[in-house]
Length: 138
Image (tube, rainbow, N blue to C red; front, side, top):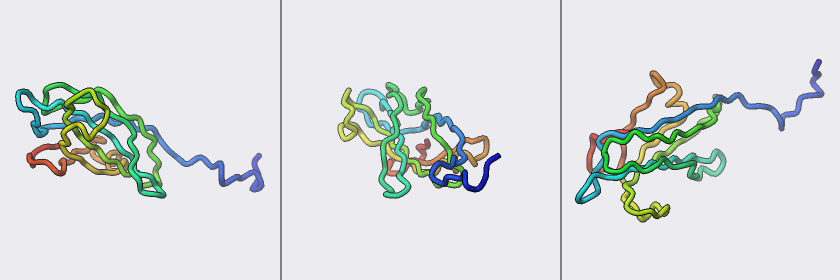
């Protein structure tokens, strides 16, 4: 039986559950001249203390589509009592370079992990910002 003396606040487990995020986009901006965009999505997480955005991962690039359904999924820990800010940046891949500044920026969407988990069917649709095509969604 545990006593109050056994409690160690530095080693308390925070309730969390694993969440798998699948990404798709519709009506993305076409930035290529002779074909359609080759989109990739980059997921960023915002730090709790310093509010700095850190890259969490990237999907694969899908050739020649404005309506990608990315295969790569992101597995995140969802902490019930914590606000977890997410940013999704979409780019049109123009070369084999991993440097994002060498690719065309298509737009971005912001949300919290709680918004995704709490949405109907755990499906959240957000418009991309900084696009010429206002119908583009993610």
